[in-house]
Amino acid sequence: MNIRSIRDIEVDKKRILVRVDFNVPLGEGSGVITDDSRIRATLPTIQYLISQGAKVILCSHLGRPDGKVVEGLRLAIVAHRLSEMLKQPVVATRDCVGPDVEKAIGKMRNGAVLLLENIRFHPEEEENDATFAQALARLADIYINDAFGTTHRAHASIVGVTKYLPAVAGMLTEKELKALGSILEKPAHPFGVLLGGAKISDKVGMLENIMGKVDYLLIGGGMAATFLKAYSHEVGLSLIEVDMLDTAVRLMEKAVRNGVRLLLPIDVVVTDKPSPEAKVIKTVSIQSISPHLRIADIGSQTTRNFQEELRQCKSVFWNGPMGIYEMPQFAGGTQAMARFLADLDATTIIGGGSTAEVINKLGLTDKMTFVSTGGGASLTFLSGKKLPGVEVLLKR
Ligand code: 3PG
Ligand code: MG
Image 1 (tube, protein in one colour):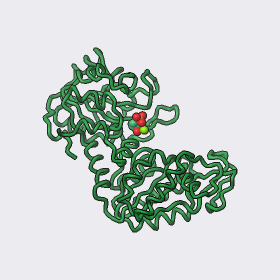
Image 2: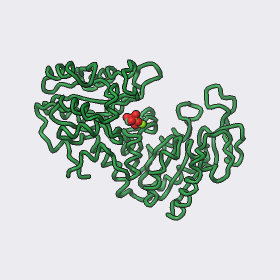
Image 3: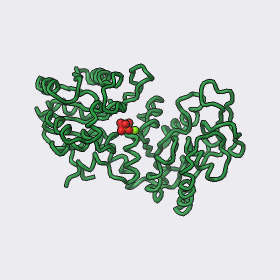
Image 4: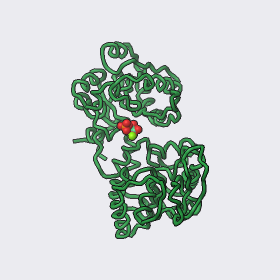
């Protein structure tokens, strides 16, 4: 990709505004970061800038505060975690624009790091407001996008600001584009795609775009229920997307036309209630799902089938858990697939979001070829759609 890069510019002694994606998962009501890999992933860029004597001004959103200050979504805890990783202080400001922020930046020494407050406390961020983008631009000499996970959003700190500052990609954004781009351009064959997660609607674009390249397509997770239903199977109380039934049929036909081997579950774990109070938890064949139960995971036979197919692959892309992985009773399929892929002798690329969280939690990140930090962004990219935050970094 013909993109302007951090390597192409002089950063020495300059004020650099680095948009990062520190939208990390927080434990329920606790203000504790449960997965810090999005912070860790930006360290190469930040450490490089420090080593070059730049003034590093970081900017991110956290959650969806909807244009208001939400105390539980302040970025101070992220600044704290980052300073532990960098082993140097990280100043957290109480806002992201304005005189107090400008004063704090004025005091920065070369090699210092500062984190602006949650940019989504201002409604102008998501509106891509020009005046707000200019207020941000005033803080720095150069803009770097290292927030790959947010490049699908045309917001002020992703798109608007690049009108007013020289704009280049950071090391994470570059690495993501390269890794995900390799799936689209030249995947090693056989190429397998393992898909899960709740909804087909999130993944149709990607499925359409890669159908001509993939050899094996394995579908588990909540979205499998809609495919099974499209085949007229009883799926009980499982959530299905009624308006996606036709799409599911169309995708299965397209797979056949393209010679793609498409596998659905043949057995599933069902339950009366996907909660710790569940009274029924059992594995059944997909022919015998009771109308009173719902699918919560893939079954062990399905897990073995999926592994059997993937064992032949030279490259695998995985996005979306196989079941309700947040609850140990229904995490079996997801964890088994994660461990299997970690040991597979193939290029393994993991889509971001919850799949990345699972891999990180199991400590398997280093055993995969690449784990994306982008959920929606990686799916948008793999759909072949343009990422607004990347478009503004292209060399013209
Ligand atoms: C993500 O987590 O997908 C990114 O940080 C973007 O967040 P958003 O979906 O709230 O725009
Ligand atoms: Mg998202």
